[in-house]
Amino acid sequence: METINPELRDLREKYETLLEKYADLTASLSRTQGEVAEIKRVSTSFSQQTIWQLLGFAIVMASVMITGIYYQTNALRNEFNPRIESLERQMNLRFEAQQQQINNLDKNMSARFEDLKQEVRANRK
Image 1 (cartoon, helix red, strand yellow):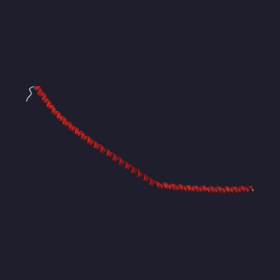
Image 2 (cartoon, one colour):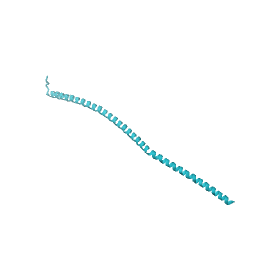
Image 3 (cartoon, one colour):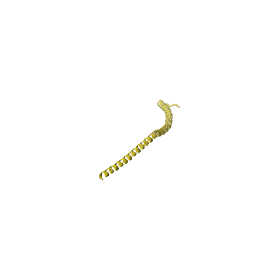
Image 4 (cartoon, helix red, strand yellow):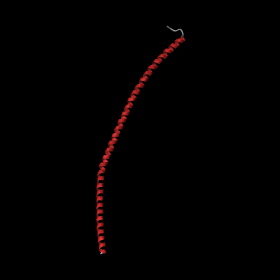
């Protein structure tokens, strides 16, 4: 059955052409939306993986730093403890020597004071 009006036939052809283009565009849009959804899913998993990798890296670096600081502290402690102990012994020896000198000076001064007392008493008599 053919239409009599040629304008109507042209409009029908344009309509069918536009309908085909619409179907193609709808299919293309559906594919694009599917691809976008897939990209979102993949990018989300990649970002989660990146976050976990960053977290793991931070934990490893923190443990390495803590271990390094602990090692250095022990190394310094082991290096300086003998030095500090020897300095303490030297200081104790010096302190004891000074105490001995002070005691000797006190004894000498007491002895001289007693001698002076005896001289003064002897001169008074």
